[in-house]
Amino acid sequence: MTASPTADPIDSPTPPRNGDTMTVRGGQPVEGSIHVRGSKNAMPKAMVAALLTTEPCHLTNISSITDIAVVDELISIAGGTVERDADSVRITAHTFNTLGEADVMRLHTASRIPVLTTAVSLHRTGHAVVAAPGGCSIGPRPVDFHLLVLRAFGARDEHHDDVIELHADRLRGARIELPFPSVGATEQFLFASALAEGDSELSNAAIEPEILDLVCVLQKMGAIISVEPNRTIRVTGVGELGGFEHRVIGDRLEAASWASLALATGGNITVHGVQQQELSTFLNVYRRAGGDFTIDADGNTLSFRRARRMLRPLALETDVHPGFMTDWQSPFVTALTQADGVSVIHETVYEDRLGYTDALRSLGAQIQVFTECLGPTRCRFGAGNHRHSAVVVGPTKLHGAELVIPDLRAGFSYVIAAAAAEGESLIHGVDLLDRGYSDFRAKLEAVGVEHR
Ligand code: EPU
Image (cartoon, rainbow, N blue to C red; front, side):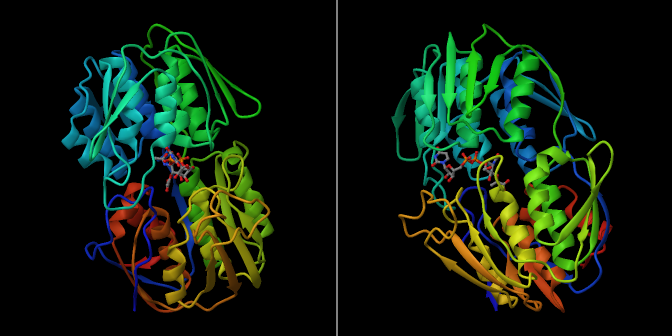
């Protein structure tokens, strides 16, 4: 049977397809060491920041994932230059051209990043074009929080069939409260406020480490930004920003994915290149579930393994930082299929991020999905008909199956399930993993997952 669950509506650029197939033989010991590079959710934002200045900007610890190729293209279309070597990129944007409708429509189906250039485009040309939500095949991609932010800075928006056009003569400082601590809308605020006239304040802001990394980049460029208690960010606009050199933080999402593979298979994986403090919530949950880890003195090499033969079930609720990340959820829940008892999962960040559990069931997992909030928080999705809670009964013996990857994190979960299963699994659409896991096949090899 081929399981083809609902795609993650936010970060899946292409529908499932049958090309790029991989066979994984499960049930083998998983052991080895990998190196993760710059964070998928921090690198592109730092590259967008480089468009706020005409001076050269230099980023290191850059990995070769497809999302970065999309940003390279976006910068070239806007009139900037991107020079790359093995792990760094130099960006110069002497000029900036507003993206046209055709480019916006094409790039937006490949990545969430184009919308983040809106404030930059308004600063540099007074005009911007954004893809309208629902304008592509992968489900709704709301931009209402982004518009809320931009309108507060004085931008005017005009809605057409596929795109929204924005205009502003000069962005002016604003006080805004977000309905939800959205990562993207907080980044939009930072890009808008850094060069806006006067002071700005954002409350209920997202404070993920990837955002703090962007704040560091903007500060190097000359911005005045303070991140204060209670999710408040204050910015004093400056007249111009300059170039910067920056090493992007390591990818804590990728690190947690490989750690979950070690947990699910009873293996042992060492991850280099991330910081302990950015994984702190994940590490506590990992230990509670029966995983263990050692961390080197610098806190950037972590070795993950199972501490006990049988994992412990637990109740898990995803949340914005410093909570348990939504992007850690699917790989970790896949490991919980091997826990001895009942685990309860409540996804509170995205309404539709449990579709992958259909596929896990086809490998033998016992998982049921519910529309109710099965967790301490009454989240925004409880009132709708959103399948956003799950009950996982373990331990279950998994067996090989045929799977179609719908999106990035679900895709890694399928690889985990296939590696933990007896027999062979045939996985289609593996190239989607290149969006967030650089050198994916080489890393699988490095940790001994048998595949071809
Ligand atoms: N939302 C709205 N309206 C908006 C914007 C967001 O309703 O205008 C909602 C979303 O639908 C979602 C919630 O707010 O329910 C949070 O979305 P957020 O804006 O925080 O997400 P994002 O900026 O689009 C980034 C990452 C995601 C990650 C989330 C949460 C990038 C490119 N993507 O998305 O990464 O899950 O923050 O941490 O930075 C992934 O790496 O697999 C991935 C999906």
